Length: 312
Figure 1 (cartoon, rainbow, N blue to C red):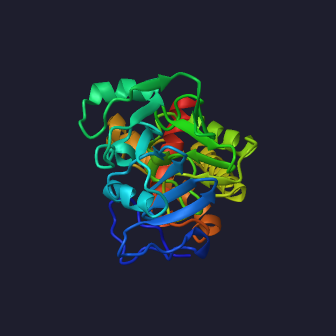
Figure 2: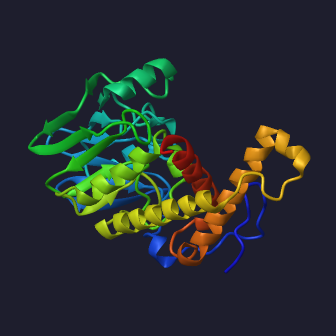
């Protein structure tokens, strides 16, 4: 098993991407691809970011506008309809998912959770207009006989991050929580509440009424099996970090003079906990998740921090 370089160490080459993590290719001339879910619902992606749009009798509802390809969303829509964009739904406030709101053109009604509106008012970013329609718990958008159900289950990734479900197509979009076939982005996708992220993964596993998951990132959509794999990895990660916390002694092997420096004491301790966590997980998971070697140290550091500080 190849060694996993620590944070800050450079590697000559990252590990190969497992076949299970790969998706359909993007036409380089377009810079995006479309995936038809039926009933007027499509995913548009550059195989790094994912957004959706829903075509109805009078227009188009767009869900998220990542700035990397937002200028091409109209081009993608034009492949299937000449109707205008009438609505834009924000999954949450992060700029990498909605910073192209202006670039999609038109003057759509913008819908988001109230927490997203609060964060965007604070940001005062012209690339992310403040939504004109907000909600607290649930909101259903009915347009021309088409339906999108928006739900909020609390802060995990960040306040205001919502679930978007298309019941007719059995598609669920939850951004920055599930990463089908891949190691999640660093530190649980920079989650604000790690235990809540774990809880949301379990909620998605149990939620009925969906077959296809749009996670907002990576090269393909997800399945229930993908959610099971991520939940299994998280369970193993928590067990590995817990075992490392239980067996690593504070200050062991350090110069006695450094033990009077509390920052050095804990830096040494946390590094050794993370190392044991990484070494425990690598034999099973290194070849199962795309990008494992890129972010496994981050996940072990974040898991250690959460268990030691948040869970005790």
